[in-house]
Image 1 (cartoon, rainbow, N blue to C red):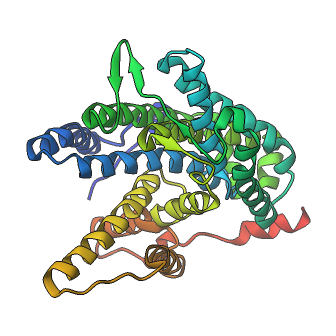
Image 2 (spheres, one colour):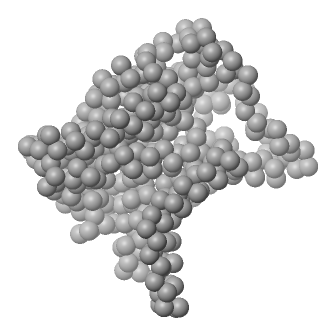
Image 3 (tube, rainbow, N blue to C red):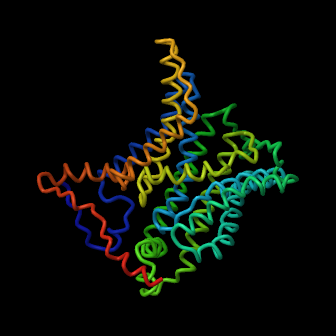
Length: 368
């Protein structure tokens, strides 16, 4: 068992709890850097493209995690901000801006629009807030069609290649460079995310999530805190949308639909609400299942001559997994890992109630 004694505030906000944890994370980083070399040796960039897509969705899930997992504001409309980031990135690139400027500007534009939407919408709570964001996601496709001169409407819009100091990056022409680009963006967002959580703003997010009345009593400005969370969340989703556009190569009004918003929410619930790791675990699950279904169909067809084509199999499997986690493991995959790790660290003194969340604070919310 490892005991960590914190003797200063700096020790409480360190990047890593101890050197062993730092070692494992640096080892993971080295593994991620070496993955393209392995697939280059196999001359099979298909799986590398799937891993890149998982990282893009993990970036989008981190944006939603900040809003829903850490601030407690449910959202079913984050595909809207992904679409905004994607289309604004293309518009900026077509206007002649370099990618290094167009990419962050696209994210900031999505964050600005998200803040404008948040100011009236955040007056709602609970299921009403979720329904408002759901309506926003449903209307996204209609707005894309109405803005046809800029978005291409139903015909769609081709996404230009990434150009950085004369180096052309395309997912299909050079998937290894595109993988490293997405990896760098993901690492920068993780670092920014961790710094936000360690700062007073991040602690304000958590306070608002646990109890708005208690947070207000401690002097936290609810409107400012929620709007800041929405801005950062929408900005992150916009950056993910811009990368998704480069990954797809061509986008239409049906690319960023309500299903994508629901998928993002399912990712963070299955991965683990309130944990950065949960965004990646959820994205990995949603990246593995379609590949596993496709490989399973191929195996049945080649080995037994059985053609399995069940409509909606993928969505149905996602629904079953989500229901199972809600019923048996509300803390998600990362929460289960924490319980398993704590069990072995504290054995034989581990108790099931150690991870039971107290619900008494909810009584104070009835006066709202």
